[in-house]
Length: 606
Image 1 (tube, helix red, strand yellow):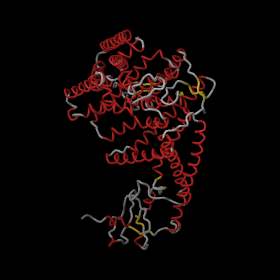
Image 2 (cartoon, rainbow, N blue to C red):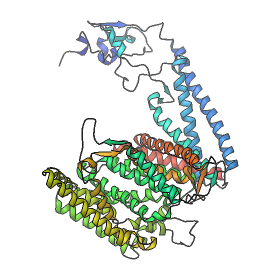
Image 3 (cartoon, one colour):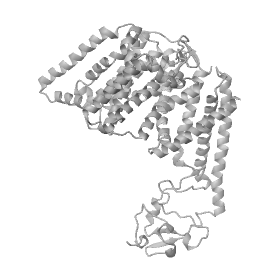
Image 4 (cartoon, rainbow, N blue to C red):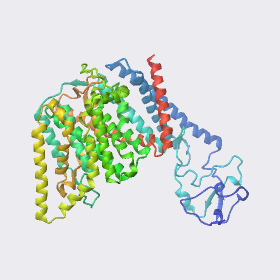
């Protein structure tokens, strides 16, 4: 074959290698262009000393982890002494143990990794350099074959990355996941501390339309100060419905949604219903766009989406002993995401055929009508899921049907996700029409835009007068069939001109990225709920001044919402790898771990 690699006189500095990896057993001798270098006695301690150095960081890890567990135990005892509830479920006890182990594991490994180089334990080659760098540990037999192969170019040694400390099989580069798990555990402890103990006082809500609308106006003013151009630096993007714009839309709706709860501003109930419909519309629009364009129906992508929607809410439910449907937004987005997926996946090889694609959307509409508008079908289909989707509202004991909440919440928006798919399917046409208007002569262009804006305002005015101003219960009856109208009006008005399409308010875009986290955490660390399965009927009071208290509590609330968002992504990348086999293995591990911690909880409950 070709020339043996050891006959080359020079090698790239980035690829130093060991003698035994290059030479066959019969030819492991010094070659031209290479010089065998014996192990440096001054820098390489004897094997027994090296073992001792490796042992010390592990002992420090065990000691640190034990100390963390002891501190965690005392913290739990203290929290239990001020808890409003003393009858914990087995799941709560099990997850409390899991949180403690996560914190202890992180602290122990963190200490071990920190002390490793300081105690003389260099570790092992980094994951990038393992097997590639010019590091060769002397063989037990010693002798010339234990030499390290190098080149004449001394700079090759400088390219070798420092050894990577490894504590109980965990590399220092793998600490990110442990840190995220420990931080998440601490946040969950804080959530419980805020809403299930007497540590923080609770107070009544201040119902004041003046304060509510004044705050909304102030936030809008700040948002306008954060106007930015869409696209990369130096690039002006005028395409409609770009990501920054939809995140902005989610952001300002979410802020008004949580302010609605904070001030108990029931007068805007109908608007809140429209905001939730818009969120569900985005579920249809965004997911259909992805599947239609990317044609990616792989398990990893779908499981990552499910993780994003349900990881946080699952732990909150277990920690707070609440039912899943208390946080109905997560359940709705999950269900309608499944709806979009199956609509696109069935016969996906024909998605480029307009007739087939529209036929599938029509079929999805038919199934939805059957499920929600034919009496008895909904309960027959979802009865097996009552353990997950059932809800027992302590504030409304008159609802004896556990699926009532799920039917009511999802039924309000059971059509708008289909409208989202239609909008995504029609997006290329919509984009072409907007571009055609921009290409018109200036006078004609101004008239065309005025006609579009005027028509949209007329439709919007008709909708407000005919439907939107109805009382709450009357409005709920027509909402599922009319919510698409104001959404369409908003889409037209928000994208009517190139200038509007090219700009977005960064404040609201940032808020739009953490809507799931702010929605869930508002129950427990921004306000205080009425208890198990309870709504946030009280304010959390740290300071006597209303506005100062709101500012401080809100700062913590938004910071932790952002941190949970980032942690969810970090842990998702570890728990949901990009290959099917990895997903299966991790799923089995997580299932076994869940069962084990639940069994521990059962044992602790006695």
